[in-house]
Length: 123
Image 1 (cartoon, rainbow, N blue to C red):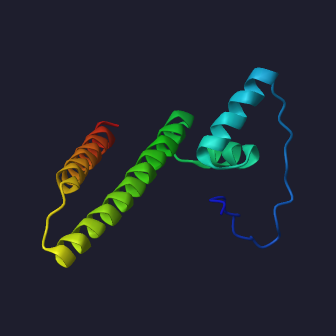
Image 2 (image 1 turned 60 degrees about the vertical axis):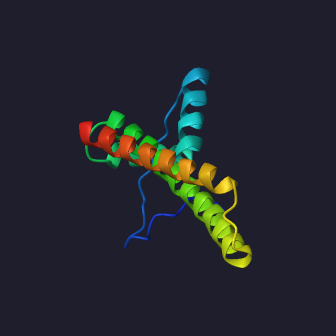
């Protein structure tokens, strides 16, 4: 499933378009940045131009979204793991040895969240 989304339709459509030329190196860099942002190159250029602040802020926003997405996915996986451990403990009355590692993983993830939030506060 793609994370890309179309922009909403606007009355009168979008009759204006521009052509942008780039060197091979610039084109490669744009493709990489667009893939990182999960956008097409034209969407990346448009969003970067329309975003409040600088182009650098737009890139930082993309990086922050990627980091928060990775953290969210990690928390989901940890939550599933802890649910399985709890189910095992409830069924057998034994607390699995893997539980300590799972708890440490939760603590590391919480620290990563704190670090990300601190970094956001400094921007």
